[in-house]
Image 1 (tube, rainbow, N blue to C red):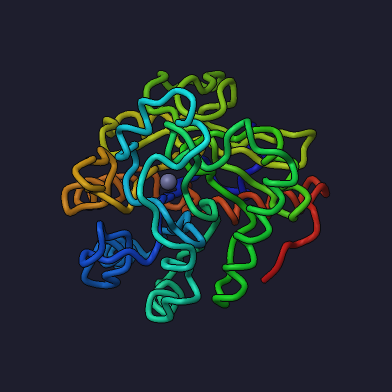
Image 2 (image 1 turned 30 degrees about the vertical axis):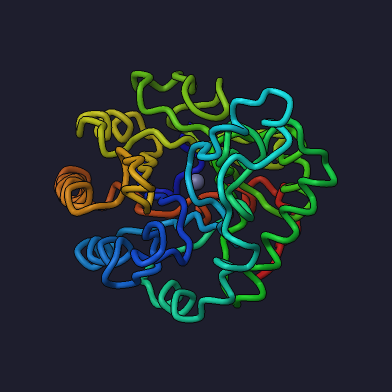
Length: 318
Ligand SMILES: [Zn+2]
């Protein structure tokens, strides 16, 4: 189970942060748009304190969500209409499009040891599950169109990206898998499980894909995609991290860049408290495991596994 690791490494650690977009504190909520003064500044502080640390920013190409839950209550109660309509107000198309925010793009590019990967095009869907962008009702053609536009927005902004996605709201329907593979993406991080006890054979049973390995990267979709499970967050005990590493697994730490979305508080939102916990955790990992630990990113692991297995799709871009 350890052949995904470079020689001499016992286990690996990576950090991923969701929902990155140019929203500022002067908008509905801050999602990185305040640059060094906001949540990404706290991430930058961690990167400076831990010179081995890598961070993957799951970034939304053109964020349109205003609230994570329905706000148009009358419509939400109408069982004939609710699945056919958006149940919140939306930012107009293009408002948060990455290329329209050059200071934000420049700041992302300036961060050390940071890779970007995809987190949907608009982060919205019709019906009650407002933020679950890819649901089973989407056709393959619709998934192709969304994935194609999402990649085009990154390229328009001149942003390099790792070839993978964390689908908003974790759901990963088969049509999305096909569209991702066709577009040249090679990894997906769908499952989050911070409850199942750690063991070498444990499988996911919480958000997103179920039945996937809790602690090891795994080939799925006939070997065409690599799946990564998020298995640790702000509310996890530090011992959970040690258990993953002692079994030779991938400690995959999840955070969300938005702490407070219109009163909806993310338990793993980036704030001073979570960053202090991560600072302590990283210091302890460095002390306990030293050079035996591979500090890496999902993109780096995926490229290593795909090149070794010889099953990589063509690169999707820069
Ligand atoms: Zn999200």
